[in-house]
Image (cartoon, rainbow, N blue to C red):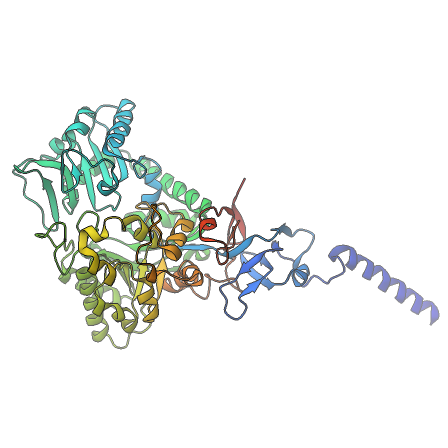
Length: 575
């Protein structure tokens, strides 16, 4: 018996020795693929708001808690990253931007930093030097309100095409306004489109003209189509595979840009059925590196025919969802296309544009609710927001059995006081972009006056206090897709000159972080999958150099993305 006991005791010592060697003295419960330790973790989980470590296996979070307890998830093959006190949060969710548009913006002229019209002309002239005659030269991001000095001559602040046309005699040029709701073109493009003094403005659009009626080169809202259709003919006059590859390149470029900025999920604000097919093919081939929630942006007739066949929820391991519809009721404030209740202060004869007839939006909304789709309608002006709320309310009343719809108003930038509480009352989400506030604030009072601006311009706090949910984004490529800049705008409302735009509407740090995480997940019906760091949730994580909840305002803008982790895999690492 003594010999047997000694043998048993020896075997126990050997087993214990192996266990100690393998796990540092702690039993491995389940070996993770990746463990982050020594971090400041903002979980966004109210039941466990902070932690030191996170463990992930097979793309799913295994553990969130202390460094000591995390050791139980470290096996021989586990990758362990000591973050030395860096900030860990759920991956940023971009709740409104244009995915392929972001990719395309990397292929064309970026005019966002142009200080004046002369710089734009110089950039175009340089691009023409390397372009074949007849090829289109494209750009995006100019804004007449940000030019210093102002263009001379100008019409309503817009430059006139003459100098641009001289610099681009052999190429059609089309430059999108920063808002995306106007374009500037040269003489070549206007001649190609047959636009002249006698051309009639289309419904929902304006050809901006000089004092004697000549087009100056600016086409607002639906008038853009007069030119854009000729570019589309040029673009489509290629082999189908060449066109497809161009879109795939845009998907790749957009993904790379998002990962650099810490974005793990992206709500794509409107793609055609044709482009959704291409995105789905990429998902089928496991070539999507961030999660996409794609809104359908197509005509009523096409949606009536195809909508029921395009519902995708959590497709391709939760990398693709299609369950919402994107439409437009008006334009942008910068181009005076936002549909306002009262006329513009700086253009008293004009109240903006209704770009899609209200009756059409009603029909599309009825089609959406009948097929289980979410509506997400662009509305910037106070009249636009009121009309969309009216449409939603009428559809909801006709369908009292349909619950938890989470329909959205995209932008919700300018809201009349009586309409602010209607968001929470109706359960309508305000899908807003904080960075638009600080980007546009320099001209908002000029457009609509101080009283209206204070009453309803980017009224985040009024909406939150009324019980409404706000999700956040950038509307890229209108703005830089960078969530850090947008977060900064949300909590400071500070302009480049140091002034603060109606500071009482600032979000708190935690409100801003919610708007970029759990609220974004809620809007896409994915709050049980993402938006917080909790056992069983998707392993989507952003690691930052600064603690967004405690660092100074100035330090927010100095924050760097150190890691972007999607599905438990490190997709971006700061070099």
